[in-house]
Image (tube, rainbow, N blue to C red; front, side):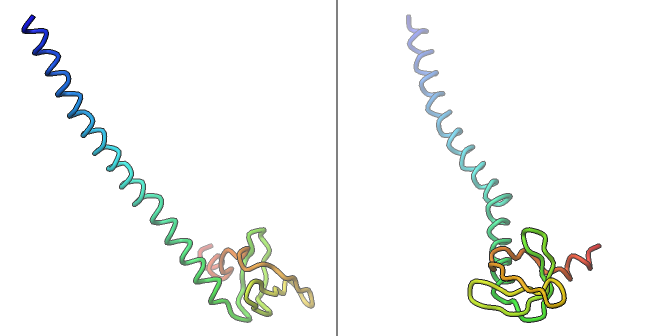
Length: 107
């Protein structure tokens, strides 16, 4: 009977230690996920926001829908894009994805 009591005490102690190791493992997983996924995404969002705020007339851009154009006018919430000779469209700033000259240089 003494051995049964000793085994129960050992399993109870092991279970308490297991809780700590589980907690440490979960914290480690969260830290890894933060540095591999969340932090780079926030950095990209910040760069894209700065890009959209720094737009100037004459810059070549691409919209999220794949429309290439040149910025003709910049307002607070939208830009006027010239997509062809005498063809201008108004698009929201949030749809601008990147500078088309960057795309051409990487090809």
